[in-house]
Length: 452
Image (cartoon, rainbow, N blue to C red; front, top):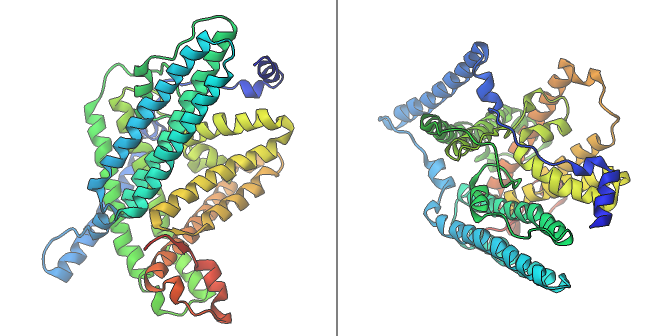
């Protein structure tokens, strides 16, 4: 512990800790400006017209006004079975880490050599996490007929509980060890603070957070309404622009030309999917829960739309996940591998993040298709070893270049995932006849399926 403290004194960056402050979400602040509010209203009007188009087309085809949400019901198939695995993971995360920490703190308080109880506690948590937060959710989503969105809920909650429990132990164990060496008061934090932490929108544990004085229930209802509105808009987006294009891809011979056409035709739905997912989840969903829990720090994202490079985008797109990666992966690896290994540490952090994203997509879609992982690592490799950004890199031209690369990259990912989804349906891998003409296609589109 003395070595750790002395090393951290030599490297002040390793002493950084997340500081929570009371602040609004950036979009809420921007909506107070009338000009931005008008742009927001235009975007909402476009979505309304988009949904009206789908309803009118259904009326022309069916002769009656219906809002066909078949894609919505398919994606959330088996939703009624999701609460049971969630409850198992929640009760384990709520009770086991806290109880093990409590027993461990009482043991090392009385024993002269704390190594044995520490090893036992670590083994118990390792076995419990591997079983309940590891194999159990994976087995559940594979063995049960869940839709992609229902699978996403279970796997997302699996990752969330793992990150929450790690943060809780990472923040509480060192103070207990310091209290033991200084003959201070050794006890876990109050259970109520841990329970609050499991629901509040952050992955960094603190005993106290800045709190708002009261709950604005109208604001909560508005954000939940916006969240479900974004879900319906995404369903309509897939129905009108994605399914008609990619479901018939097997009827045409594949070539590089068709791939280019698919990518450019998917640019508009891809960017709408990106923006709706961001606004629905990172803004509306998190703000609704933050308001109900009176959680005052609403920095769930920053101005990622002003980014001029992908490293800047990764730092500002999802601040909640970025903070966890920075404080518990990047800083800890930097302490282990020393400050001179910063490029290796940075690359390792992004590899872990990309692997987890790929893991989520694997279990949600049911096949292994690591294009996102490869693309992500290539982007990061290009950004790690570049020189320090200059003032010119923040010019509007660089922002235009970033948005162009983001749109094309996301459209490419969107197209390839859609093609692979329907390839798994129309052309199973075991029925493909190998030949020189389709080797490249199999390499590009040949995902490893987990579906029965």
